[in-house]
Length: 354
Image 1 (cartoon, rainbow, N blue to C red):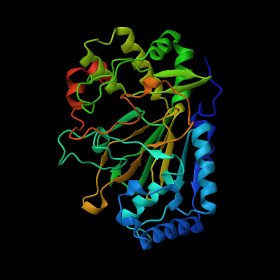
Image 2: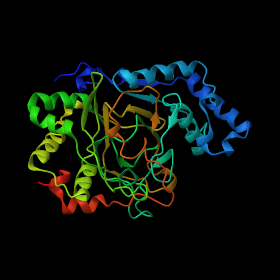
Image 3: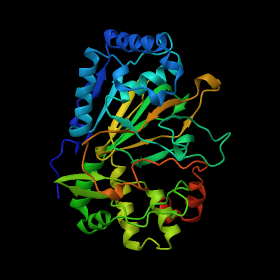
């Protein structure tokens, strides 16, 4: 079941970072600064960032570079890293956030809600000091390779950690092909899918888990796509009362084993001013645990977007965990699921058993 997709890359597919970096020139950076300055002069930076439209970012020649990067994400290797966005000397944090939003609009015509609060631009920081049950991305723990419920994921670095926090991306399509070579039966189980926990962000009266199975791999119009977050699967099956079988555990363990292979991964540090954009249906992402800088204004801080593109890639409706893309806003609700408790009480199901 080998695929013939440019997103089925391996580490050796790239001679070096220049094969996937888009280095912004001084002219490109000035274009971004000028666009933000124009917004400021028109009073548009005083409005909610979500109201800013693509047409308001006059990126000129830079727009063509962004359009080419989008095509690489959509139908090529599945990811790009833009390097050297303007920083402190040119933009404040709020202005940087607006610039990232404007660039993101060149990848997705709309930005999906990332949580029940309806936030469409969020900050990836360690919030554990003031949030007892944060989403895992708002902690400093290691995150294994996974996907989100969006077409694309964008992460733009404002500050790195003092140590750790390396980023990893993995070829979900390459992982698919390797599993098929090793164990076709396990691959078939992954195509069958699993139920996911909705983390407490479901609508009133809705089940706390997906009442349908969400495939790990799906083939639509000849294209294979991936959707995977193991702890969400384990939590979903616990909530549904349908325990994972030994065969299920084996298939999930095999997925994790292959996903750990260096062959299908790229590890790198996102530097200040770097912006990563990935195709969430072909490329998985992870990050290492980290230690923050002691200064509050220098903590590890990334700006996160979930861009959605028109006619991006055909995937099963079941890839959506809710009645609609992303996390539909649910006033008064927030993520309430404790993944740490799950890892302790059900280590085999979440893949942490020794």
